[in-house]
Amino acid sequence: MAITLYDMHTHTEYSHDSTQSLDGLCAAELAAGVAGVAVTDHSDGLYSHKNGDFERLIRSNRCCREAAARWAGRLEILSGVEIGEELWSPENAAAVRSLADWDVVLASNHCLRMEDGEYLGLGPQDYTVWPQEKLEYFMQRYLEHLILTARQTDYDILTHIDIPLRYITGRDGRILQQERRADLVDELLRTVICRGKTLEVNTSGLAGSWRTMPETDTLRRYYELGGRRISIGSDAHTAANAAAGLRQTAELLRSIGFTGQTVYRRRQPTEIPF
Ligand SMILES: [Zn+2]
Ligand SMILES: [Zn+2]
Image (cartoon, rainbow, N blue to C red; front, side, top):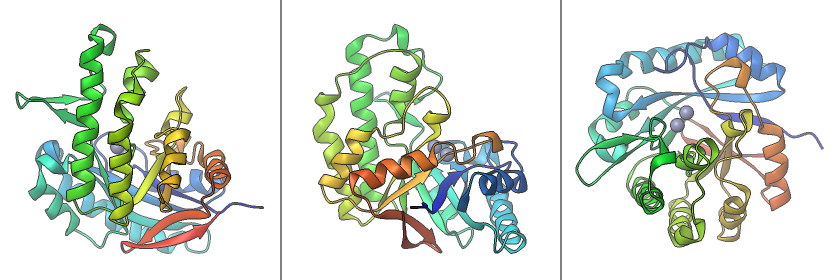
């Protein structure tokens, strides 16, 4: 049976870390057989001012609405935003949410605030030289902050919930004792479920040599705990990565028991059956 695919997490030139044109992205999504794409350009709260987020995001939204008309009948184009680090920049996040008539708001954390007040980016660290206990603690702290984010903030989809592992294990080859954090993962999943929010399966790792975020066991656990709202996002920053891994992930989700993907329009959820 054919699967209707939506890519609910992508970036364009209106993100600080992408130069991809919107039409180029849309052409690649359409060629990959995608029915709809959400453009979710970044607002990383801690750097928002430096990045000129507000102006960029208004333009992202406007361009999406114009493109939606151009691509009508071929590809549905949704306009969203990925708000990062809201715990530590709530005023920025509130302002970003009210900037435009977003279809979808993603919540994410790309760095970690340590006890001394320092913020550590997840990607720039060299985890190969960290002591094991520091690594274990880092991941624990990441999850604790993500639980607070999931519990306190106004979002639709919680993104790439185990992204530190992409760098710690996927890139730097360090193995963590995941069972030490099973309770925290359960608490995070339960928070998403209780609030009626949606968990993202981020497939950007599949374009490299990593896996989905989160991995299959956590997706099964989410389903087991009663989670039904699920979305898939390629997190593509280039047309080359558009829709990467979407189809195989949709098939995986169907095999777990999920009956469809949750898509948002004007921040209202709808299930698109697989
Ligand atoms: Zn992200
Ligand atoms: Zn992203």
